[in-house]
Length: 53
Ligand SMILES: [Zn+2]
Image (cartoon, rainbow, N blue to C red; front, side):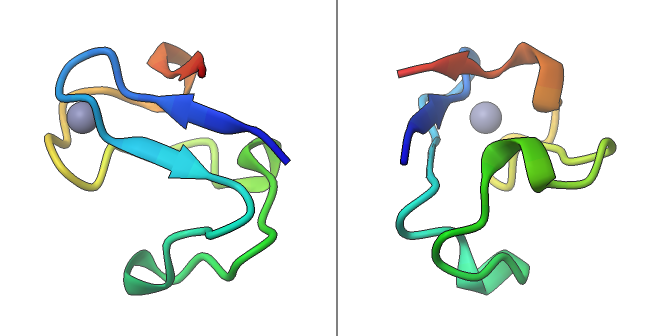
């Protein structure tokens, strides 16, 4: 399980936790998020912008 961080606002997607509020269950791999995944916090950064923490 890894964490991926938004370079814009610092939001971190933790694969172990997921983001149930956004509809992603705990254990959802970052690579399995939709290709149009946008940062839930700032909405201006997309999946390819995230950096592995
Ligand atoms: Zn962000």
